[in-house]
Image 1 (cartoon, rainbow, N blue to C red):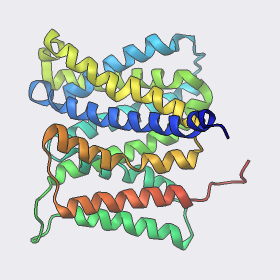
Image 2 (cartoon, one colour):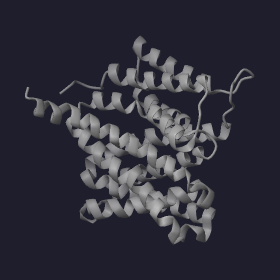
Image 3 (tube, rainbow, N blue to C red):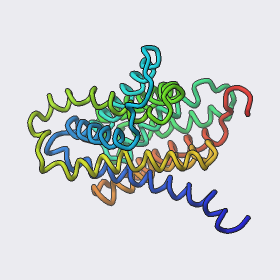
Image 4 (cartoon, rainbow, N blue to C red):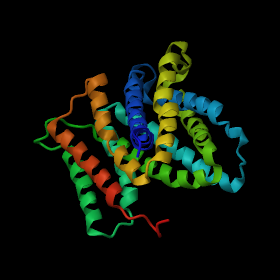
Length: 290
């Protein structure tokens, strides 16, 4: 295979996926700088609203053909997306970014292993549980994590699992318009929460540059790059590479937010990453392979 073909088929999509993950976690770090001004609820509202506007201009969702039946999965997809973003940002108020992402990853991991019956799959479950156990507060813990923050991150993971389930159905019905339509639904869900929490501060023009950067880095740019990578990489390879995201989040938190993790917390993140990568590499898809 010529070197140029090898680059475009293998190296380029992997590089794009890595850039997407770095962009998402850098955007989350930047979003945390808005918390003192509008809180996590207001920050989520700004991100989703601006993200919806950007995606609407790019993807032109008004061209989609909507029916009452197809809107059900779209509504579920949008509500899951809104809940995932809101609870994830709320968790960042009290726990480090890397820990929040690792806990959130338990949602899609549980979904992947839900119907597992093989012994090997239970190894990945045990690894994930071990990672969660390492994060529980004990008398020997080097640092305590806020229980509410951990619960919110796990709830965000549950919403992530629902986002996958409804997203598959909505994507089959609405194609490329799904992300834009779902983000609009998510924004409509979160805007009242943001207004109740932040009030008039949400409309401050001074916030617009940072909020716009968060929307681009956390939504428009990574979603576009991930879509390109997903079309060029096998689904299993894509999933394994995505398992690196908690580590990237932890490094982003360390570099941009000075969030230093303890040895136990790094081990917990490592266990959850290994469980996610192992499940992605060995899980058997349902039905016959095509």
